[in-house]
Amino acid sequence: MPYMYILRCRDHMLYVGSTFDLEKRIAEHNAGIGAEFTARRIPVTLAYAEEHQTIVGAYEREKQVQGWSRAKREALIAGDLDRLHDLARRRDKRSP
Image (cartoon, rainbow, N blue to C red; front, side):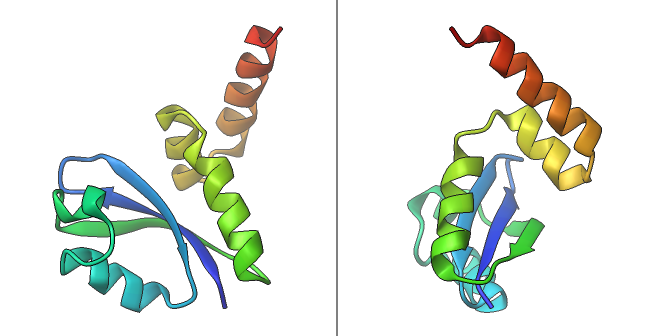
C-alpha cells in the first residue's frame, strides 16, 4: 500500500515524502540513503502517515502537504482537524 508520510528529524525539522514500503523507507532515511535533507538530520522518526490507493495519490498528497506551513503540518500530525481548517481559512483570507 502506498503512503504519504511525515518524518520528524533530529533538529525537529519536518520532512514529507511518499513510498510503497514505509518501514524500508524510514530505515533508508536513517541510514542516510535517499534524501540529502534527512541525511544531514538523522535520526528521524515517523510523525505521521496516510495510506493511499495509488502511489500517484500518495505523491499528490505529498506535494500538497509540502506546500503547507509548519503549523498546518503540526496540526495534521496532532490530528487537530479544527486547527487545520482554521489555518486553511486564514490562508484563504490572505489570498487575492
